[in-house]
Length: 374
Image 1: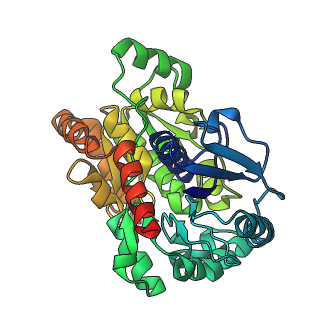
Image 2: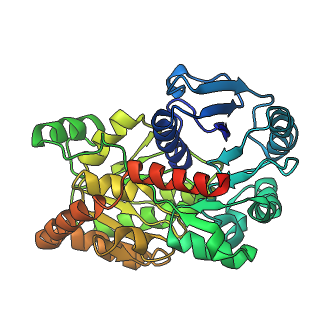
């Protein structure tokens, strides 16, 4: 059997949640199924490390698809022409985009539909493109994969899709994320936070990630506690996040906020392992991989009580209202001051993290592909 795959998000040292999902699933299904052929469709020169096994044929298709007009061109022309020539049995797309100009049975992974709920959080053209095309992709798909029960319900409801057509394949965390020894923690703190403990945020600095309220809450927490604790934010700027920048410049304790930019996975796993706690207070999330990464590192988690996050955390996080700065502040203060609570969160998190594994994700993905083949 021949499976074509959209691999445009396999970018060395530049992968966020969707890229990590693609990497971990594809690495496993290609190696575990040497009897099948895989055609990897890239939109630029690829790194050899993404050619996981001998049964992969990489193809670079023009143009680089990083803008709505170029998405359209890449998927509706370049990808469509290739699929119609090669005639694979399946087209699998880990970022949810499909080609409507082909009859090849297609399986997208639609991670979430945040743009339907918060269209203004994206640049106008991108927002329009997603809201126009994703309902069409959902109808066109033979099966849909998504990363939480929350997203499954949301997609079914918004796009009038039968729940039977949607399979849930949870995300997981890389095995590099593990508990650090005290000496290693100290080394990382010396490198990033002047030797002080720090709260950690990990993700692109995107409006829906709610960094604006996180900064306000951190400032309040510092005033109330008098603690020397810092806030480390890891992730690239998504596009101009003016609100966040305004809040940052108005902060009293802005000198205790450290922006690291993007970090590679080896470094990020250490920065996560050395954190005092992860604060993950997005107001919309299809899954939230950093939550599982922190739990695996035995780092307590403070997370939002909305969308998929209560489902992912189970009872293993201090949940807060992401729309309330006071609620976020209280959550941080409580974990900071209550050692018993902190320890309970670590223990429950360790247990919860075992529920998620990329092996399981890959296995369930393969089962969905087989449903379409038969």
